[in-house]
Length: 240
Image 1 (tube, rainbow, N blue to C red):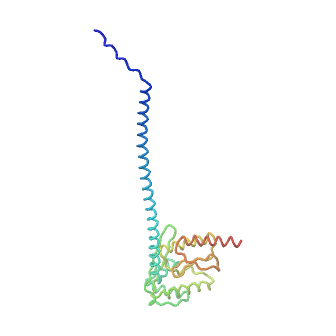
Image 2: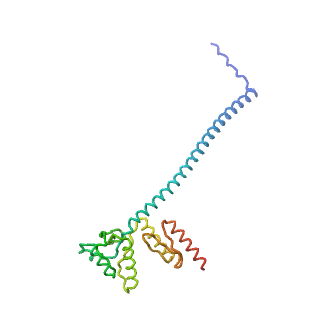
Image 3: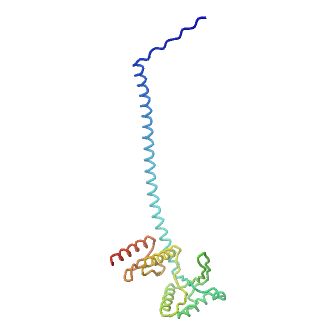
């Protein structure tokens, strides 16, 4: 059998090469255009997402401010509800074991400090025992019918201690909300760190003074403490 003659390939011309390169170039351009379109769409989507994130962040900031105002009003209301309440600290456990009438005991304790008080002026009185990793504390909670009487008793107790040579170790203090208690602890911490002269509680409000002759500053937030600390530091630098 005779072999079938092989078909000869047509020679590749420059025109063929040019056409093929043109086709490849067009294909690359089409892919590039598609990629550029995709990038534009992704960029637009990212921009929209970023705008929405910014809106949400602004909404969160607004809600936090509103929440802060609500919490502040709630704290003020709660503290106002405690205006007739006083805490007594420092009484030893053994002294309280035999107490059956806490009102009567509070009256006798007041008499010990030359303070006139009657059971009829006390709405209720009870003992709380606080146990924590840091301390064990007997706390006597006293509710008076008259907030002015409570203020008078606390003032008389302070004056008695000032005129006494030996300190009793017993403290009469305002009952604070948990937030105001945290504020007071922070204020005392700052006072001890920078030797700020005055921190005290007046009618359930935390009061600080940058120096003895300075004005009273009502502390209602941790930011207030920071601002007062800054003023105290500036005053200290100006006096040098």
